[in-house]
Image (tube, rainbow, N blue to C red):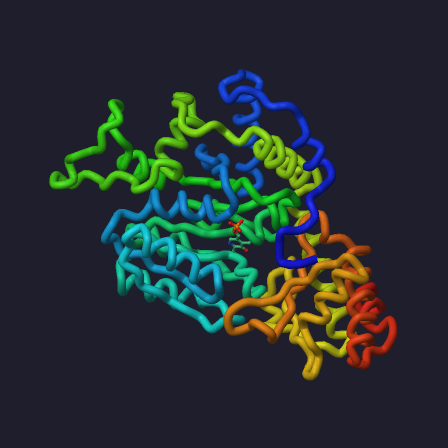
Length: 392
Ligand SMILES: *Cc1c(COP(=O)(O)O)cnc(C)c1O
């Protein structure tokens, strides 16, 4: 019950035990096409270019950024937590010229501030994080696409932590590239990064492609595009592999594809709305339960992520001792925190297969017992009762 990875759905694990297929086997390419269709629905988009990057969520982030950012291009980063800082680190390596619009950890950046920064800096790319698990806050993204389009910028969103658990509305936001991972609300293991790319972003990326002979474009002086500085994460080559051309690139990670396909089938089988409601109920119950125990929940309720809750470690309680007892006595893992929040809060998740009533209640019951054992007075049953009531 941490901020991810979390327990995978048993159906996903079973799907991943199927035998391997060759990457150009017609049965396998059919699965690839199915994955593209399934993830269009998961990302709530019509984007033709919707597929998987082989690697953890960070591989999706890096593929998007290295393919979108030409050396020297101005990139606006919207940052309010650790994953915003990760964007900086990657953009710097891509040779981007970084400008930022920041919020304090625990807060979000108002869309008006993003609009102002876009108008001032005229960036080529705007990059942001939807749910930053480090702070447990979700950045509102309505209107992002209009602002970017008005100034000719392409936009990127890291939705790793929210995909499959909160509404990731690619087309409604007007976001050009959105990436995710499986190990949070999608209920799978880490190792595959779903990605969706708008036509206009794909066109930009294809213009950075090698020529058919594999020779880099040398027409930069004539206003051509710089070639993408990575082979593995070259989205133009990866699109040529997933598209009708089926040009060989890497060997698709067969087993991860089975897993990603099953994750999406489960998500869509449950239904996006039902799934978001289940995560919201789990978040509501967790928050109410923690408060019922007399603990202080971190951050404001308006922008709280549904699937991970920060809670202050009470005065005089050893946060690591509590985590150890939770794991050793109850087999439940809860999360620590990073940066300015390290040693101050725990982060307790309820994601994907773990966003279930009994798991939330058992976690709260266990935490109560552990807190009492660590000398913090909690009325027996207070957290569980409050959570039961809040679940509705
Ligand atoms: C968990 C998380 C990641 C993790 O990336 P991995 O490469 O899969 O470890 C990236 N971004 C966000 C917002 C996350 O919450």
